[in-house]
Every structure is written in structure tokens, then in C-alpha cells.
Length: 287
Image (tube, rainbow, N blue to C red):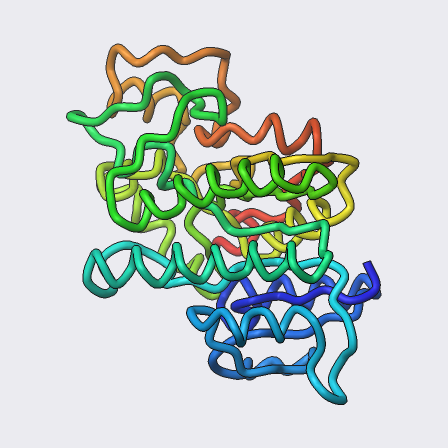
């Protein structure tokens, strides 16, 4: 992986990904609309809703670089509700199509992109319980917003790109709610009302562990399209996971005995096929 393009490399997760890849010896270029204050990699301003810009950015940019070997696509409107439904869907699905298509045209055969935990049926609640716990990649997506609908269609799109181009590897990482260490001061307050965070089964992903998952996906011995739930190993709560599940989702099958604070966003597949193992926890930062 001589040179890796990271779209959205100026965002919360993107900045962590760029730094992690640079720290592990990769040559990285940040493709975004705005530069990162943590300028550890060259920056090229790109609007990915313009196919011409996307295509050129994944081929060569004057004296910056003459090729791209792999793409990490993180650029997107990052959540539902930040703008209108149509604007969210239109921006995200178009940008992703442009990146996938431009990568294929440039001969790039490894694409890792940000899918989302939202395809698992979020927000979870009494009227929309999960089919079982911990949730995983084995049931069909259940998008409940324009944002998650776009993410669901991106996963299908990647499947078809890999059918068109059998040598491609396209890995979608269903990231949980991305957190940085500065966010952890708020976590103890969630205990007062578990309903505040039940919408994603009390999950989260430390941006540094998200970056680890990206790095592992770039070199995993896989071909074709694959999707993985990526979360931290624990929940955002101090209460036991089994207790939370029984209280919030009565009648939902819990498929194994749970560790005290074990995540309810199943990461077994990522552990098995990527070698992913979260190294961080909000509990390490608790007062």
C-alpha cells in the first residue's frame, strides 16, 4: 500500500485514520473540502459530488502524487438530520458512486469505505427492537432514514462493482457512533437514563480503534465485497449489558452469555477476519 487516498480525512474519524496510517509507514493524501488542523498528510481540495474531480483525484494531481494504490472513503454528511433528507441521500450516494467508479477506472483494486451501524435498524427501541442480540452482519439491512438508506445502497453498489471487477476488494465498515477521548467526560451521565443511548444498543467506536479497523481492512486477505460491524468492545454504560438488554428489549433473544459490559454490536466477524481488537475504552478516561 504505497499511497492511500483518504476521503474525508479532515473529519473526526478521518483525522484519526490519516494519523494512524502515517504512523504505520503509509504514504497518505487527504482528499476533502477543507484541510485538517492536524496536517500530517498532504491535502487536496476535492468535491466528490463532481465526478471529474473524483476521477482526477484518484489518478494524479500535478506535483502531489502520480498514482493512488488504495482508497479509504469516509467523506459524507455524517449522520441523519443534519440537512434535509434528499440532500443527505443525494450527496452521500453520489459521492460514493463517484469514488467507487473512479477507483475502478484508475485500476485501484482495494477500497475501504464507511458504512454505518444505522443499517442495523437504528434507532432501536420498544417499537423497533433488534431481531436478536448482539446484532451482527447476518440479517438484512433495515434502513430507517435517508442516511441509512444510502448506506444500505452503497453496500449493494459495492457488491455489484466487485461482480463487474472480480479482482476488486471492497470492505464496508459499519462504524458505530464515533468518539474521541474528549467526548468521554459525558459518558457517566448516560447511567441516569439508559433510554438516551438505547437507540444504538449503547454502542460507540473510539476513533483510534476505527482507524485500526481501516488499516487492517486495507491489508486483509479478502477478495470481493465484505461488511463488518465496527464498535468498541464495551458499551457506553456502567450497568451490565445483560441487564440493559433485558430491560430495554424484553423478549429479544440474547444469543450468548454476555460479559459484564460487552458490546451489543457484535464484532466477532471483524475479530475473526480482520484481526480487529479494540485497544481503547472510555473507562480508561473515567475520573
